[in-house]
Length: 103
Image (cartoon, rainbow, N blue to C red):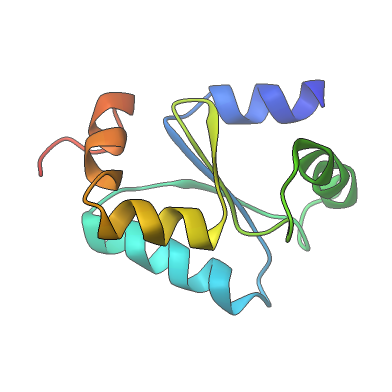
């Protein structure tokens, strides 16, 4: 869990993903369309991916990917991110965290 906290507090937008997950791809594309450059950890490609996935599960991530952290805080998975986007709340969150410079 400590390793997870270190990873999510270093950058304004962190996404935990898997290369084979279509929802992860969708969420990453959404952020790229905003002009945001997220820090992405592909859990199926990094050495401690299984350990991070277990920590995400303990946080309540179900499914464990995609898991999005904005400003060091866990925001949610694909459903939560899309809901925030539809409510027009996602861009202000990104701006407040320093991940998005212009709207």
